Image 1: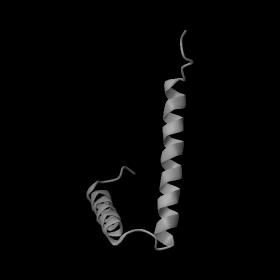
Image 2 (image 1 turned 135 degrees about the vertical axis):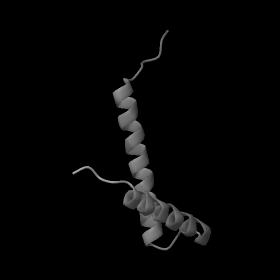
Image 3 (image 1 turned 30 degrees about the vertical axis):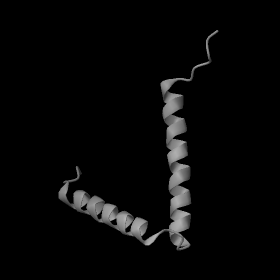
Image 4 (image 1 turned 180 degrees about the vertical axis):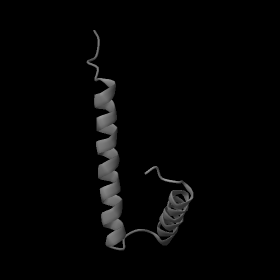
Length: 61
């Protein structure tokens, strides 16, 4: 017997949906102040690095 398979596109769509749900939970916990201080610090560092990369990368017009 073979198990049913899903297409690559469906797998990517499922993964993105799961990631979106996880981000929404994280954002809700962050807004409610439920994240540990260490996690909040990590998120702030990641956000700062992302902003720095965006500023350093020229955007095409």
